[in-house]
Amino acid sequence: MTTTETPDTLRRILDHSSRADPYPLYAELRRTPVARQEDGSYVVSTYRELTDLLHDPHLSSDVRHLSRPTPATDEGVTPAFINMDPPEHDRLRRMAMRHFGPPHTPGLVAGLEGDLTSVVSGLIDDFADEEQIDIVDDFAYPFPVTVICHLLGVPREDEPRFHLWVNGIIDAIDYNPETDPKEKLDKGVQARKDLRQYLGGLLEQRHGRPGDDLLTRLANDDGPDGRMTDEEIVSTANLLLIAGHETTVNLITNGMLTLLRHPEVLERLRDRPGLVVPLVEELLRYEPPVHIIPWRAAYSDITVADTVIPKGSQIMLMLASGSRDPNRFHDPDRFDPDRRDNQHLGFGSGIHLCFGGPLARLETQIALTELVRRLDRPGLVSDPPPYRRSPVLRGPLHLPIVQGRS
Image (tube, rainbow, N blue to C red; front, side, top):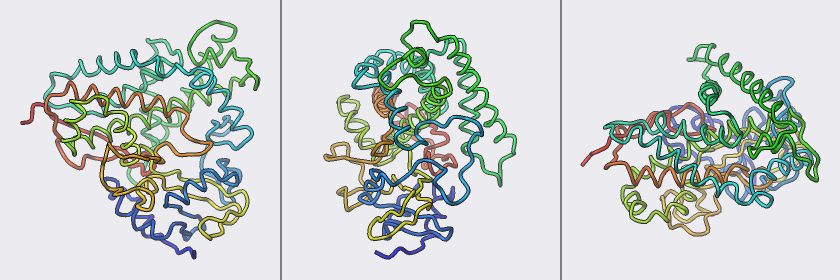
C-alpha cells in the first residue's frame, strides 16, 4: 500500500472547530490507513494497523528515539513509566500494579465501591435541587480528584490544594499560544512543580511507617523487583493523578452527553442498572476519553500495511478512529450498549494499556448510574456543548443541563 500525504484532513481534525464531531474526518483519514505527513511523521488510523503497532516491540514511547526534536518535558524530572520502554517500563509497571490491582491486590478497586458511591452521592446532594447544573464543574471534575487523593493517602485538609494544582495543570494542557495569555502556561508549570514537591514531602513521611495508602505501600515495598526510588514513586503518583483524572472526567462527561442524546438508553439504564457495565464499554468505543496518542517513535524500520516507516519517525496513533473502523465494528457510528465483541481501543492496547482503567470504569459506572437515577428529567442546555481545545484528551469544557424538563 502506498502512503499518501493527508495534511488537510489531519489539520482539520486538530483544529478546534472540529472538536464537537471529528468522526467524519476520521472516516476520511481511514481511506489511507498509514499516511505520511509533510513533516515526515506518520498517522495511523485503522483498527488492524493500530493494534499491530500497539503490540509491536519496535514502537518506542521514549522521546529519545525520535529523530526530530523531542516534545517538551520537565527537565531533570524522572519520567513516568508510560514514557518508557521495556525493560524499565515493565519493571516499574509491575511494581505499581502490585498495589493497584490484580494479581497482588485483586480486591482494591472493587473494595472502593462503597467509598465511590458515597462521594458521588455527596456531590449529587449538593446540586440535586438545582434547576441548572454543569456536569463538568459540579460533578465530573471534583469526583476523580477526591478518589485519587484517597488512594494516595492525601490528608483531607490538603485536598483543596490538589484541586487547584489539577486545575492549573489541565488548563495548561489546553494552552493555545495564539489566544491564551502566557500566564496560563506559567501557572501550569508552577502547578506541576508544586505538586511534585508536595508529593515528595508526603512520601518522606511514609518511609518505615505502616499504612494502606498507595504512597506508603510503594515507599516500603521490597518485592521481587526491588523498591522504587522516591523520584519514581512521585512520577507514578503524578501519572495516576493527572492521567487518571482526565480520562475519568471525559469518560463521565461524554457518557452523560451520549445518554442525553439517546434518551431511550437513559431510560433503559434507569430501569436496569446492570446495563451500565456493557454501556461503559460501548462509551469507551463510541466516545472515548483519549482520542489520539500524539507520538510514538520507530526505533527501527517498521512495516505497517505494506508501508515502511523509517527509524526515528514520529507516529501518531488515532485510537478513536480505530474504534469506529467499519472493517472491525458493525455499524460503528451507532451507539449500542448491547454490542458484542467490543474490543475497543478506549484505553489503548498492548504493554501501555491504561493501568488505571479498572478504576475509571468503576467510577464511571457508579457516576452514570447515580446521575440517571437521581436527576429529574435532565435535558441539554445546548448541543453541542462547548469543547475543550485538546484533540488528544477530548471532552466538553462544560456540560450544562437543566432538570425538570418535560
